[in-house]
Length: 423
Image (tube, rainbow, N blue to C red; front, side):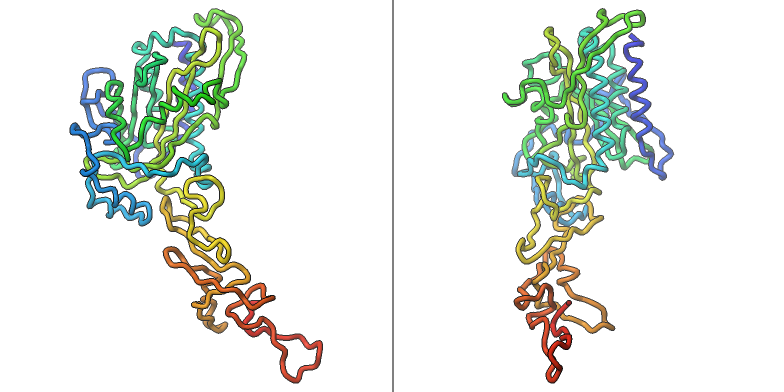
């Protein structure tokens, strides 16, 4: 069996190279294990409460979601300390077809790790159907894989691997979860087998639902054909070194970044009855075996939850990403200027009068006092400027007076000087 798993060592090595070890930590990884089995059971150390909800079913009356909603604007973690929670909180009404442009660079390592891990599993399950019958025997390899996925990038706070053998069951056969504790003195990885707790992983709304798994296993009718993200490869095998497969040539399907899906909205985790003050985003992708006719067949999903708290949320940008073009600046008289470096917070922008408009509340100063014109620097949310049109023919101005005046007694053709112009 070892030769079949040899590519995993290469994958594990590449994922570990992508890890960014913080300077303040010695880089020690500690396994949390209170069980006698090969993995931590659900009765072991509790992971994030989004995965281990309280024993009593939560009700809507038990929770006040106002502090979580306010945190989206303020970014003040102290606002969450006064609120108790029974489950995670997910924003509603987003469902954007794309992520904000500012997310592309920071999320690239996580996207790459998901695609690489999915392709490794694609190769394993498409090379031999024996893998499906030896899941328990290969459990240590799956443990190592879900841990390695967690180490691919420091933004990844949690990784999950699900394996599914029954095409009709709404629940996977195997659910492994690895999570890190960012507040621990040493880097701690908690591994859990949550295969028997599937329903408890998805408490009632506004907690995140199981769409990260369900949408892959039970796609819409228009998506039930071969997934667009899969590309076919022809494999030429060296039978002298492989016990399986038994054929010299075979088909395989691989994926890329386009096969990774993101949740409809970010969420706040709930741990020990308190919100964790970091917005999280779920990314997931599927891996596939082969049907008897050698077409792709769903086998499971791998998932990571990434910390997006420090990623800027640009309400000024156009497009179809989260909160894109959701500012309150007047589209005709004002332009929106995003304030960078504020992280995942709404309201981080200023409104500035467009050319041809001015803010009458601005008090122009002389050259010694410097420019304090809010029509140049903008007025920041939640305040908004009042932008009035300049005198007809003026491209820019500080007030409503004419841009050019003729000096008395000056001969025709003499250049005029500005009166209220910004020239």
